[in-house]
Length: 139
Image: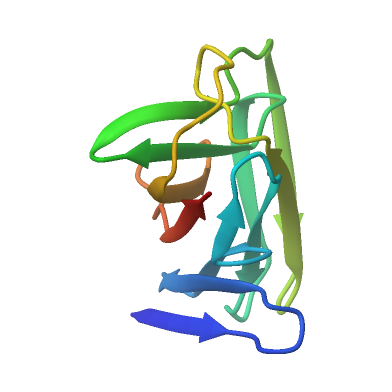
């Protein structure tokens, strides 16, 4: 199921999708930015099942984002992380929020150009959904 969500007062925009009773909502603080403004990316994972769900990770980094422009990957987070198991459990109805600030730099730290960028955010576990949203960067 795909569900588009737009908030008017706080200007948060994003998209959510649900798989096996877990909702993955990806949002940004706005849909359009001037060059050089920071982009606040938020992933909220909510357990809509009737039982606790535990997520297991092969390292301490549990969340990642990828940003593409014109079909080319320009930014990844994280770049490097230490191997070490971690986990978290969501009780019925509980959510976990992950946040990342993107400073409009590419993988080499260079400022990006104006255009439309696609952002995906995900838990760092294979085969989980990766909701995507787009933003506009302009002069």
